[in-house]
Image (cartoon, rainbow, N blue to C red; front, top):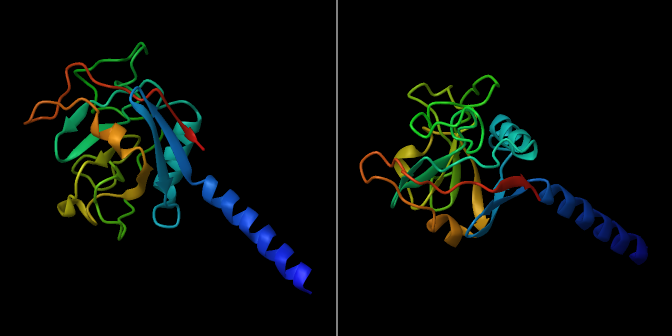
Length: 184
């Protein structure tokens, strides 16, 4: 009976570890690797979109077009923000998305604290598509207003190194970019 219990615990821990691994992403930056934990139980549609775009290489080469010191770093414009693509246009970065339809909001109880990953959108709560941002510091005014769906669990020091933009607009003239973003 003891062997059975130990085997059950061992088997369950393997399954649990495997499930957890599927909700971890690795974002490679020039400064180092950033590990991101996703919360599919809180925002399943945003997590699915983020993972699908990531694992299909859509975020590779996408610039951090809007970075405001003490607030957040925004990226994810696949249409205009993907460096090296024919449609790359830094002056339009932040106005595009993917070819997929916009997502309905999934406001959660996840607080916008340092390291929170959240969906960028226009003034329409149901306009999130591919863009996202990572908070440098707590931004409680965004709580339950934006669809938070993950958090940085390792490598936040590399997010901190991302080139900051203009203090007013956050526009970055020579932006850093995502080298790659994939499931771990």
